[in-house]
Structure formats: C-alpha cells, structure tokens
Amino acid sequence: MKSLTPAQVDALLKKQAAGSTVYLVGAGGCGMSGLGHLFLDLGYKVAGSDLVENELTHQLQKRGAEVQNNHSSMRLEQARPFLAVYSSAIQSGNPELMSAQGLQIPTARRGAVLAALLRRQRGICVAGMHGKTTTTALAAYALEQLGTKPSFAIGAEVSQLSPHARFVNAPLRDGSGVPPYFVVEADESDGTLGGFQPDHAILLNLDAEHLDYFSDLEGVCSAFQEFGAQVSGRLIYCADDERLASLFDEAPNGVSYGFHPQAQYRIEGQAEAGQLLTPHASRFTHFKLWHHDSLLGEFSIALFGRQNVSNAAAVIALLHQLQLQPVEIARAIRSFRGAARRQQELYRDERCQVFDDYGHHPAEIRATLRALKEFAPTRLLVAFQPHRFSRTQKLMAEFAASFEEAHRLWLTEIYPASEPPIPGIDSAALAGAIRRHGQHVELVPTLEQLCASVRQAIAPGDLILFLGAGDITEAARGFADQLRQEAAATRESLGAELTRRLSSASVVRHDEPLAKRTTLRVGGRADLY
Image (tube, rainbow, N blue to C red; front, top):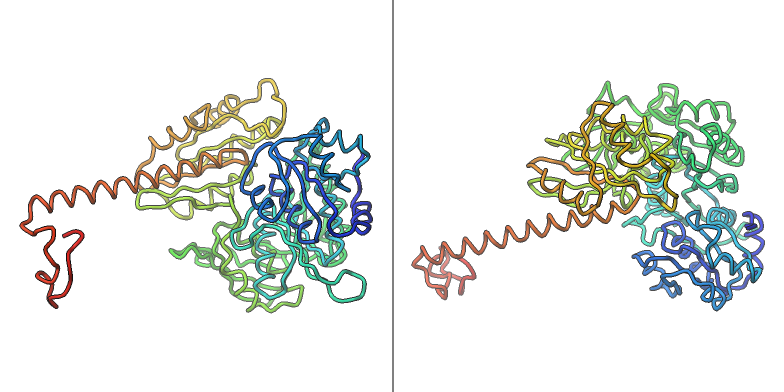
C-alpha cells in the first residue's frame, strides 16, 4: 500500500477547507490521539476507530470526534474522509485501510502527517531511544511557562499539558508573522524520522533498539545521521553518547551537552560532588550547568536520576540557544512533574511506595532502577513485563544483566504488541538467562498472579516498581488501588475499635456536650471522644 510522503500530506492539507474529515485508524494510541487533537485545533473534523475505548478516545469524543471501538470498512466509507492516517501498530490487512485503498482515499503514516504539520511552524524535534517523551514534555512545558505558547505533540499524557497535543493557530510561514514553536516527539521506530525537517532538534541517545524495523545498530545510526542533516538550526546532542558524538562532533550547527568534560553545556560532576545531584524530601534534584568556562546557573527539577538531569540539561541548552535567559529557564523547568508512566508514583504510605514506569529496554531499566535506588528503600521490588518477542530475542543477554539493583524480581509473560510468537522466545527463556547471570527471578504467568505474589512479599520500607510498555500498567494501577483500599479499611477498623473501647470504658454519655470538658467551656455534642 502506497502512503503519502510529508510533502504530499502538506500539499493535500493545504487544499482542504476547514470542516473536511480526517480518519484515524488506531485512534486510541497516544501518538494517534495526539494527531486527532491537532486536526481538531486546525478546524478539521475527526473520525476514527480503535479496538478498545480508553481515556484518550474519550477525550477526542468530548471534543466532537466520532471514534468507534472497532475497525469497520463501512464506518470509513460513511465518514468520507479526504485522508486516512494509520499508526505503525496497524497491519496492512486492516479492513479500513483496504477500504480506503479501494475508494482511492489517500493514506499516510502517523509520522509522515506529524512531519507535514511541523513544516507550518518553527519545529523542534526530540529524538532518541530513551527519554524523549519526558524531554519533549519538559521542553513544551518550559516554553509554555516562558510565555511563548508553543504547539506540541507528546507521546504520553502530561497532567500539566492537557491534552498532550495542541496546535496553536498562528501565522504560517508566509511572511505574515513569526509562527510559534512546535515541539514534537519524533519517533524513529518506523522509519518516518527522515521525513522531519525541523528548525532545531535534541538528540538524546542511540542504542540497539527497534530491531524489528532496523536490521542492526548501523541502520539506526544511519537514520539519525540522515535526520541530523535536515536540521536547519541548532542540533543539540548528548556528548556522553559515543555514537552521537562521533556522528555530530563536526556538525557546524552541533551543540553538545552532558557530563562529558568536553561538552559545551557541562553538568557539574555527580561523582565528585554528590550534593549537586541529591533528591531531597521535597523530591527536587539540584545541579549546576556550565556553558564553556562560565557557570550558566544552578537548576532544580522535580524529577530524579542521572538520566533526567541529562534530559533537563538538553532542554536548558536548547532554550539558552534560543536566547532565553538562564534565570527564567530555571524558573520554567522547576515545577515540571513529568509524563505519565515515566517514574510515576502511584501510591505511598508509611509502609511502601509504588511506581509505574514505561521502561522496556535494558538501558531504560538500568537507569530507572538506579534512579529509584536514590530514595534508599529497604528493598527494591521489581515486576517486569517484557515487550515484543523480537526485542526479547535480540537483547536477551542485555536484559539478563539489567536487573542487578532489584532485591526481588518477578517476570510475567511477554506482551506481543501485535508480533507473532518466536519459537523458544518467552519469559521462561528470559528467566533462565537472568538466573544464569546469578540473579533469582520468579516467573508468574498472569498479571493477576503477579499482583498477588508482589502483595504477599511486601515488607515495611519497600519500593515496588511495575515496569514495561504493555498492559502491566493496568496491574500497577490496580495494585495501588488495592493498597489504598486496604489502608482505608484499616483506618475504618481502627476507628471503629477505638469508638467501641471508648464507649465501653468511659462514663461520658454519647450526647454529652464538649463544653463540659473544654477549658473555654464551649462546644456541642461530640462525634467521638
């Protein structure tokens, strides 16, 4: 099936009047639902489908989009769209895509459409295998706090930027004014990265990831090199990543950041001055950033871990290159609380803390576990759901060595993400690799059993982490709700017992006024003595 390029999508959109319909196949994903919000902001009608209803489809429906919870060729025909957009999760045999092809309705991948919309404003792309959602959200949030009112498209829900995508209608690039910044999370997983032509970009890292699409790591590096060549303005890249440094050290528009001593924006060393990177009771992490030989400023973020400090430094470097003042930048980033499923705390009491995280690659797992260890829990309990058979197969050895910080570890079955099974590749095989690495792991087939096993293991002072990009997040939220209900039941039970004991042991009548027992002699009937 032939899909439109970003240039072709751009030309098609310019010919369509407001009120024309765009159809989204797979509208319930974060990326696709974000496109829905962008099209609604631009004045188009939105229709679409997904196999399940969720909060993202409900948000679109509240804004007038017509989204159904099944894929139907008849529904697409009735909508009569001028464009059908599909996500990378949609298979080529999807009935709606086949219907669009039969009706000669143009089709385009999500990434190509986002790249087309980016051309209308001053585009800022954030790319990389790990951390791009948090970094994109932080950049958009900071620009919002700095009064620039940007457009943005983020690959997760962000409580401080709702909805997670917005298109600010402002002058286009036709000489009639300065368009807003448009901050987008540019996905490299499906080959659409090369379609983006941003003014500026942040490149976070390169890794052996998305090997279901790329043949090897060299293919990943080639895609990033091609993308970097298309950035017309500042190319902000991490000097701590050897692959990025080798690709872009000589780039005339390259600006480096990181812990590396040669970085143009240098984070002051963590190992030598630990007090600069310490999560306090208020959950703020503090660090200093140098620009060449001058101290740019001291910064604080309400996130934790070395990786989040690095991501924040990338955003600071970009904003400083855009001529924004360090003091204002520091104020703009300080109150950012992160994106959903990125080291997200779901529950905390005097017994334990529960976190949910999207990490599904060995590098992300290691970074998240190290960050959570900074809270110095008595134990770190980790429940992990592997994501994709292909990723598990190709990174088996790396996964086996990535859980060393965990005191106890559980695995549940692999979340396929539309992939067919690979013989011999399952959670039992991964568990075996982890055990051969010298670490104990418990294999639990279902999410229900997983929650029960973790609940039975909890001891005071534990930090529990649910980890993975699949539906383990539902188990995490259910687990947190269970703990909340248990805590509420305990409080109610203690209150009832206290009332019983006081009622039986005291001579105070239930209707006795408080005035008799207070110094000021005021007060009516007590609810509880």
